[in-house]
Structures are given as C-alpha cells and as structure tokens.
Image (cartoon, rainbow, N blue to C red):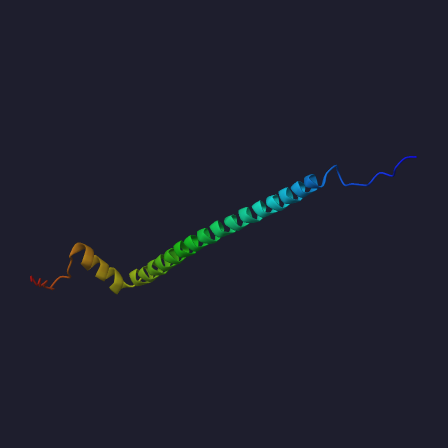
Length: 97
C-alpha cells in the first residue's frame, strides 16, 4: 500500500522564508528610495522658493523704479545723480569732510 504524501509548499520551508525576506527587503528598499527622492525634492523646492521670492522682490523694486522714472522729477533726479548735472542758474555746493 502507498503512503499518502505530505503536501508541502515548494520543497522546503527555508526557501519560502528566504523569498519572504527577499520580498520584504525589496519593498523596504523601494520605500527608502521614494523617501530619499521626496526629501531631495523638498530641499530643491525650498531653494527654488527662496530664489522666486528674491526675484519677486527684485521685480517689485524694478516696477517701483519704472514708476518713479515715468515722472519728470524722477528722471531729473536720476540725471542729476548720474551726470552731476544742474539747471541753468543753479549752483552746486560740494561738502568735503
């Protein structure tokens, strides 16, 4: 008479254990990789936000300067500062310290 065979998954239990450990390792490696990419993306986002804020402030400054230059008084001030100019009849006094 034939003995009934004992049903086993695969051939040995250590192979199943090894496959489970391997699957867990691969999942953990994928999670770690995703977390590192997210961390790097957050760092880059902070850098780009700082750069954007700096450029936005610079843009606002330029817009204010443009508005100032649209007036005749603003153009006159820039002309006087850059070219040391004066209107006819004005005298320039320089104070030397």
